[in-house]
Image (cartoon, rainbow over all chains, first blue to last red; front, side, top):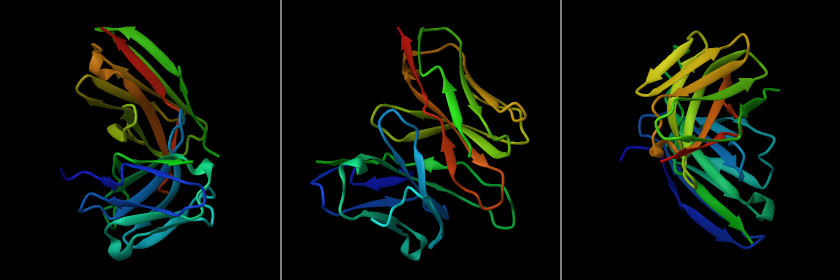
Amino acid sequence: DTGVSQDPRHKITKRGQNVTFRCDPISEHNRLYWYRQTLGQGPEFLTYFQNEAQLEKSRLLSDRFSAERPKGSFSTLEIQRTEQGDSAMYLCASSYRILRDRIRGTQYFGPGTRLLVL
Amino acid sequence: KQEVTQIPAALSVPEGENLVLNCSFTDSAIYNLQWFRQDPGKGLTSLLLIQSSQREQTSGRLNASLDKSSGRSTLYIAASQPGDSATYLCAVRRGDFGNEKLTFGTGTRLTIIP
């Protein structure tokens, strides 16, 4: 399967603990995105990378959140000092941007990591 | 600020019927619009992507249309099947260069009754 993968699929943690999620994009994709989805809502954009550069961050991404994409391959999203309001599905997506061409393709999503903060 | 609305929030139809899902957006300066399907507790599956210069896209029993000037898109599903039961989300991407984020609606939860 060459789709977007995320690990873990489920995470239960206690308030105040740190958690880290991993996303592996489709191998040839140079853009990677993180979204958060709460129950009954559509996903909300958090941040995105082109290769290893983080190009945009949402105001939703407080200073307790940090995302990295070392070497432009997989990405990690860390949440420090988790709060109950962080409980959500965290979705990763990837796409391929053709350089010198403004065509931007479909974002392909992974299965998500469901976080529950007790 | 872009806002995306999907009506109805939930829809139940008998198997075999054709149906239309609606999506509206407030800012017509979009680059493209995507329709996704989401099964309970799962990630999103891309169904169709329409560039702003296009009026419709088709894939199998699915047809998506886009009227950018009026801020509307529809997803038409022909000959519905129980396997089509899922939440359908539309998402728009802004037209300015470098703006990558998708703005999603809250979805329409579709149930096909056997």
